[in-house]
Length: 457
Image 1 (cartoon, helix red, strand yellow):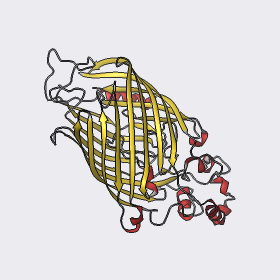
Image 2: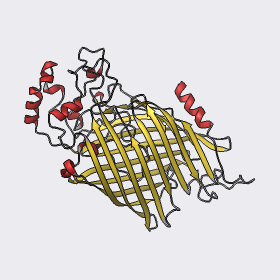
Image 3: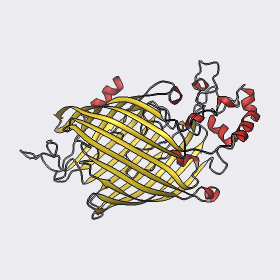
Image 4: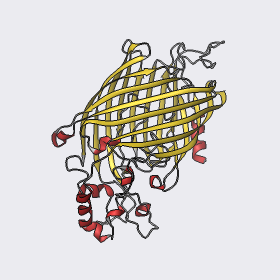
C-alpha cells in the first residue's frame, strides 16, 4: 500500500504547463467537463509494479497539446517518453509521438524503443503441452534446479513510422514500416549458487532442436504493414461509446542465417463500448487474433503482437498485462492465437485539483484466450533427444517433467480480476489491477498484480 500511496501522490503533483490562460467561463466537452487548452505536461516518478516484471522505477512523461480546446479530450499533439528499469531487470527507453496535424488529413505515429529484458519468461511452446513446475525455481523444494529455469534474455530494439488516412467517414487506411531487432540468449542474472550443471529451459530447447541454430540468437527484421480500420469511439483513452475494428497484414523480412524465416501475419481486432449509465458505467468488450498465414516465423516474433497503435511498451503472447491478466507472461507461446476481454468500467468520483480534472474509477474484467495455431512437434524424435540428454539423466528427470502429451493444446485459458483507476484530464490514467487464473498451470501464485498506465484497451 505504501508503494501505491507514493504513486498516487506523485500523480496528484503533476505539473500543468498551459499555453493559454483558462477563461472565466470555460466551455465544456461532450461529457460535461470543462475543456483544457494549450500544452499540458504530466510526469510521475516511475514507481509501477507488475508481478512479471517486479518494481519498476524511473520517470514517465505525457505531453498533450489541446490547442484551443475545440476537440477536447482529443488533442493535436501527443508525446510520450519513458526511461525505467525494474527489479527483475526489465528496462524501457522509449519515445513516442502522435499527431493529426503534421501531414494533412493523416495521423502520424512514430515510435523509437529499446526494451532490454534479462529475465524474460520462457515456459515452452504450445501452452498446456509444456509442463510448468514451480518447484524447479523454488529454493525450498527438493526438486529445485535454479532460480532462472523458466527465464531467458530477450532484448528488443524497435522503431516504426505509421500513417493513418481517411477513406470515407469513419473508415481509415493504415500504412507503415519499421524495424525489429531481437537479441536472444540465456538469462543474465546474478548467478550466486549457479553451477555448470544448472540449466534453463530455453537452453534445453536449443539443445533438443525445438529452437533452431538459425533463430536461437535472434536477428534483424524490417517490416511493412498495411490495413484498414473503422472507428466511431468518442475518444481513444477513456472511451464511453462507439466501436472500433481493424484488419491488417504485416510482412516481416529476414536475411542471412534467418533467410528462411520471412513471414506474413494477419491481425484482427474488434472493440465495442456500451454506456450503461452515462459515462459513469460502461461495458467494454474486445476480441482479437493474430495468426501466421504465410512463411515461417522465428519463435521470438511469435510472442510479439503487432499493433496499429502501440499503447504498451511491449506486447507479449497470451498471458500477462496486455492479453490475459492473472496468467504468467508468455505462458501460451504459439504461432497463432485469439483472445477476448469483457470489462465493466465505472467512474466513481470526479474532482478538480491543481487546476486539473481528475476522476477515480474502478473496473472488473474477465480475460480469455485460445490457441489457433500450434508448433508442429515430432514427439517421438523429441522424446528420444530428451531422454538421451545427460543433464536430464543427471537430475533424474523424465520426458513427462517437461511435456504433457495428453494435454489439450486448444483448451481456453482464463483470468478474472478487478482494478482501480485514477485519471487526469481524461487521457493520463494510472491503473492498479489484480487478476487471477482459472488454472494453476497458468500461474502458481494464483494471482498477479499490475500497476501501470492506461486501460488494457
